[in-house]
Length: 503
Image 1 (tube, helix red, strand yellow):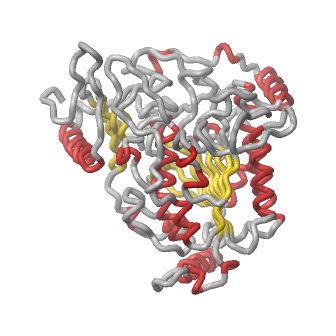
Image 2 (cartoon, rainbow, N blue to C red):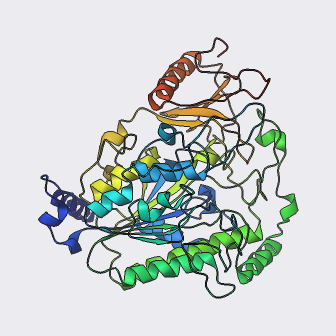
C-alpha cells in the first residue's frame, strides 16, 4: 500500500507540469520538488560502503542515503575522465558531439597524436541549470566546474544564479594556493581562515544557500573537488586511518598486485588491489561528512521529503597512477580506462515522495539521462532537441516501464592516451555484452560484464557474429556524433580508422 501511495504522489507531481502550461501557472512553487545534485570527483563505486561492505573507508552518510533511496548498480559516465562526463550531465549529450573528449585541456602524445578536441562547453548549449531556471527554480553551483578556461564559460553564464568556486581549475591545486586548504587562489571563492578545508567550506556555503533560498524551488549543484588529487585531508582523519590500517595489519606498500594478473592484455601497469591508503581514506570520509552536513540541513529546514537528492561521481577511482590511492576491484582498471572501473559510477537517488527506501535499479543508465530524468521528475518540459542522448531515468524511480528499458546500446569514444595509462578506444554495451575497440590498431575485446564483471575473459574469438554486429553499431554511432580519431605524429605511421581493412 505504501508503495502505491508513493507512486500516486509521484504521478501527481508530474501531472502538475503537463498540459503545456508552465509549472508555476499550474501549482504553487512550494509543491514543486527541489533538486540537490551532488557529484564527487574520481570517487570509485567500490569506495562506498553502500556498494562495497568490505571497503576500508567509512561513508555512513552516503550509505544512509542509499538505504533511504535507490541505488543504481549499472550507472555509467559517458567518458573515463572528468570534464567530458560533466559536459554530459549539463547538456544531456555524448561529449563526442562537441569533441569534448578529454579533460580540459589534456593532450598526451604517444605512438600517435590524440584527436583534436574542444576545451569548453559552448554557451549555446541550453544547460540543465538553464532548464530549471526557466522553469522558475533558483539555481546554485558550488565547487568544481572545469568546463572552460574563460569566464564566459563559467557557471554564472551557464544557467546558475549563484556560483561559489566554479572556474577553470579541475584540481584545487591546479593554479597554486594551498590545494584543499585555504588560501585557495580561486577567483570565485574568497579565502577562508588559514587552514580551512575546502570541502567543509563548500558544504557550509551550500547550507547558507538553503537557509536563504527564499520561496522558489531550487536546483542546487554541489560539485566536490574531492577525491581528486592532491592527496590532502584533515590531519585528525589521516591519523585515524593510519591507526586503523595498523590495527588491521595493512601495509600500504604491499597493496599492489601482480601486474600481469590484473592487466593480462595490456602493457604492465602498477595497480592497487587493496584499499589501505590513510590519506585517501581520510579524503573519502571528509567528503562523506560534508554530504552529511548538507543533508542534515535539508532535514532541519523540513525540505528533505520533497527534495530529489542525487549523489554520483564523474568517473572511476584512481587506481593506476598519481599515487594509486584506491582499488576498484573487482572492477578492472579505473579513471582513464574504458574498463568498468573507469566507466561505472555510483548513483544514488533519494526522494521520499516517490522512491522506495532501500530499492535498487539494475537498469543500465548513462549520466546523459540525468537531464531529461530530473526535468520529468520535476514536472518541467522535456527538451529533446537539447538532451539528444539522454533517456529519462524518472520511471526507474518508481519501477515503472519506460523508454530507458528499451534503449539498445550505450556508447563511449575516448581518442586519447590518458594520464592514468589508458589507451585510445571506443566501446559499446548491448545487454550483458561490452565490446572495446582499440584505436591504435583496430583490435577488439568482447566481455560479458554480467558474468565476467572483472573483464578478464575476452570472448571475441568465440562470438564473431556478435562482434561484427556490435562493431557495425559502434561505427554507425561514430558517424552520427562525428567522432574524431587519432592522427599520425610527424613522419609516423597512419593510425587505424573505422572501415580499414585490418579491422
